[in-house]
Picture 1: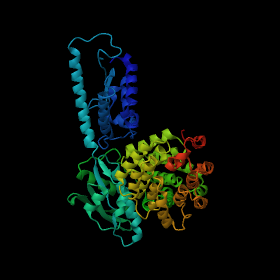
Picture 2: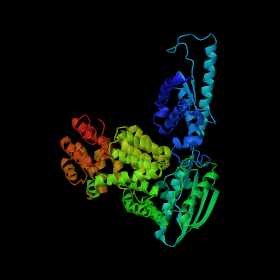
Picture 3: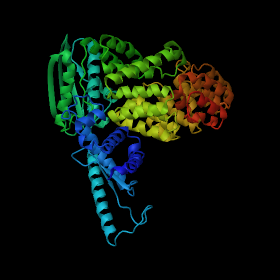
Length: 605
């Protein structure tokens, strides 16, 4: 095309970037915009793999394309997306933008419009146009089929689970190190293209239990299992691992490592290489090598191990250990990212007294600081982008928060906690309930045995009004998890069967209604059957205003319900917005006070 057609090309570029296949994919959009603008500026011949890696994907100036295939991988995806676009919504566009194989210089060309298309001034010669259309159609179909095959094979990743490594040391207090190391191996494998790694929460269901590879593989829906042991003696470390194919219990690969603790990152890297080579995969974009001191890493693993205990209390316990690790090594990016995530969830608790103790403004400021530091040290750290999304959601920066979460998922698609946080912190507050359910279902696929995943998915399904589906997920929650039974009974109440729910709840709570605020379900049930005095009694002892509001709504007292919700506003827009999607609050919808309350915390109408 001529240079004078640059505006036409840019218009075509904007059409493509606004299309469904590109609108929410910042990575591919940035790639396409860069190569087109370079071509229009006359620098298309200079578009080499190393330059694209640095300018588009933020690699260092010494980027070695032989060790990191991000540019080639994303170029293949870009070619496929372009082919899909021109096979569908872009079929009648006057300009075609292509990225030929084997290079990064785009081809920009006009397409002859059909006779009936707007802007056509002359009829084509008889007999020419049908052959041209047929040829173009065959070309596009071939490109789409090739793209589909590439995507199909790539969209069927190998599923693998890492069972908790066994601590062979005599000191059982060293479990934190073994558990933390297991988690690090899971995280290292999760950023490798072609692997779908089951989350740590599900894998740790098998800790301390007899190992049966086939049973574990079936429960975790994994094709391969990595198992092994760790023996730590002072600063020496011995690790034995083996990769087993589930279907026939066949060991594909094993590795034994005797090293100084100072080379623990090298050991992790070798384990990843062994698995990747055995499965005939390639180490992809996310492969990074960290260095830190033994002391800092030990503290970091202690913190990570706490997080396997429970979602909230474990996060709280982990914070001081992350802070101590960073005091030992202020340049250790994973510790900054993990600390930011711990802060994000700690400030997300729904106990107002905790907010007063923590000092929300001070903690939010610290959270921003550590997240930004993590991203400065490693812009490709998915956990840091997810933590940034939590920060932005708490500040009602919805568009920025969504971008941060999508970036985190682009970097590490199998990270279940990112999908859960995206669902609860952004999608539910914005009322995009079906999208929230979809994200929670994807989280369940990678973390199938997690009680937290089941509870959050059930919450989203309740908000969507899908009560039977929500109940099905409630029963998957471990009995030891708080409110497991109560959450299931919630469906009975919402279905108008509160009288059946009351005996179950009375037996469950048995006078301990004020211990955790969980008695709101019983108070809600009492209100639904007209036992006002009992409902009022329970409302009075609820420590959290949102739970009081639930009971007041059932009592038909919307004034007190709004007063309680106003007291809950310090929880922030993400938490308040998610809670307001509950079906229990349906009677408040349409009330102008609800609009004002949402506006007060930065939620859209």
